[in-house]
Length: 260
Image 1 (cartoon, helix red, strand yellow):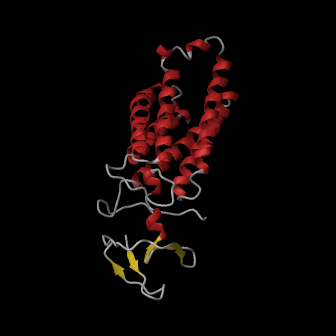
Image 2: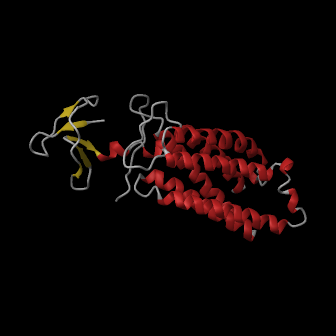
Image 3: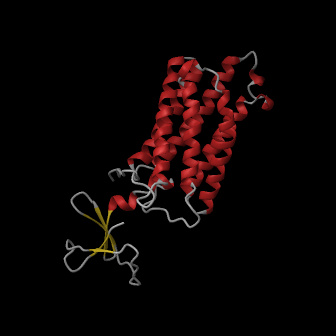
């Protein structure tokens, strides 16, 4: 990160070492520039996009990058979510003529479910309420989805002979998750474009899948599968943002902050 000292005139800058620390208390925080491209903290000036660059990768929509001491669990959680969503969405889109999604149950139990749930607990331990809430609950979503499809739980079997009721029940299940995801979407509107699009596209996916389940219109379910694939790629992009840095990769994420 490039750090600038402010000497007298606010617009006169020179580059210093980013490891520099000062014992002088920070007096104020200001946005500078024609489009707020700089942020002034005390007597130091930074590029705004550098301070926002980790938001998607850390699953933290707050006003500053999340500081973690034990490693960034969000990249694992986002990767688990992306992989499981990608595979199920291909089935929902009926790619290669596949209509039975049971192969995804292994991912739903152990990767999208258990691994993502564990990273959510890790986020809560690190103090990231948003990331912890999102990851633990979406991990729970995958576990509950698997439970519906696994015969030993007897959930789908209970609707034998009443398939319409089962379809509507699944629709209600998906509507509930759409509402929760929309709530999370509202909490990302001051972060970055990729972070916001992740939850926005997931909300659309849940809505389309719910409509498809309750109406029986295959085309709507397939549309939900397509938006789910898009959601998976956006999730992978955010995971990449939390993994790739200028120190370990020649390719890093490009941050587009949302306007305030």
